[in-house]
Image (cartoon, rainbow, N blue to C red; front, side):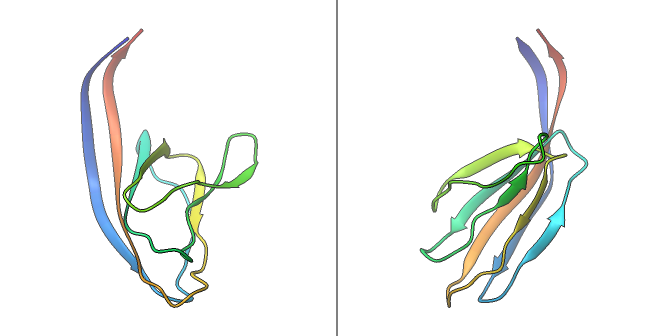
Length: 99
């Protein structure tokens, strides 16, 4: 297995406070990543609908990076507590992959 390059693009951050949410959506890259920079107890994690149409919560804690296929439908559910959640997200494409 070999990969000639990995191209990270569309890098951004988001902050959420009580009642903030990010609706269901997808991305156009190969994979999407989320770094949980500020993720206090009481924050909501990322929810994903996978290829089998199963919805699940990502098990993450502050400092974790998660990566999943960009075509998985995902969202950030509403923050229910008086906390601040900060994430850094990015899209990544791999090129010239061989097996």
